[in-house]
Image (cartoon, rainbow, N blue to C red; front, side, top):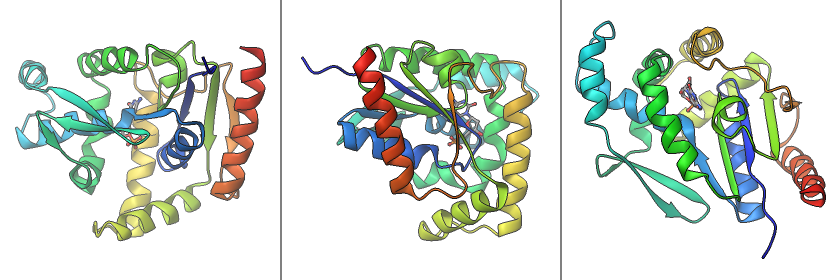
Amino acid sequence: MEKKINIAIDGYSGCGKSTLAKALAEALDYIYIDSGAMYRAVTFHMIKRKINKENIADLEEALEEIDLNFKRVGNSNHLYLNGEYLENELRTMEVNGSVSFFSTISQVRTKLVDIQKSLAERKGFVMDGRDIGTVVLTNAELKLFLTCDLETRVMRRKKELDDKNILATFESVRENFLERDYIDSTRADSPLIRASDAILIDNSTLTQEALLSYCLELVAEKLKVY
Ligand code: DC
């Protein structure tokens, strides 16, 4: 049988993790799992239920109502929240504004990390997020940590939002990145940090093609060893 590895990609919002993860999954015929979409789905549900962020009992009750399912479509897993497929609904500025907060809640993390671990029990997965190399796929053979300068992140994300007809100003995108960077990297439970064995890649000036071909070389090297 063909040898496969698991690939963990972490980094701040908007550094190009999901673009790279999808491209790697396609090139290698692996399966891509977007862990951030799960935190977004939980946040979407909490907003819909008008859950007060301070009220942990209500939050736990609402968490119980959440059923996440996945349907394989090509090299990705489409996420269904209580039977509903949501994509653009998870990418609004409203969800962006609350997702980092809900991601600090340990009960939320425990539920989602369990699901993520069970999804990638075998090999042949590319998962991106904030704690994939440090908590979720600690045994991943290849761990990448992407960085990118703030202005490039803002420009790229604004274009993505424009393409999806989601309204946002440059300033609001910048503010949201700064706020999420801070919350994601300072929270008590599994903060965003580079795993000691993760390869650091600055994606500020690389084209998507150059980044992909560099990462495919890294995969090829790992496949020789494992
Ligand atoms: O990757 P993203 O921007 O879609 O993630 C949205 C938020 O979800 C991010 O600001 C923090 C949280 N998140 C997390 O805490 N852990 C992950 N593994 C993935 C995302």
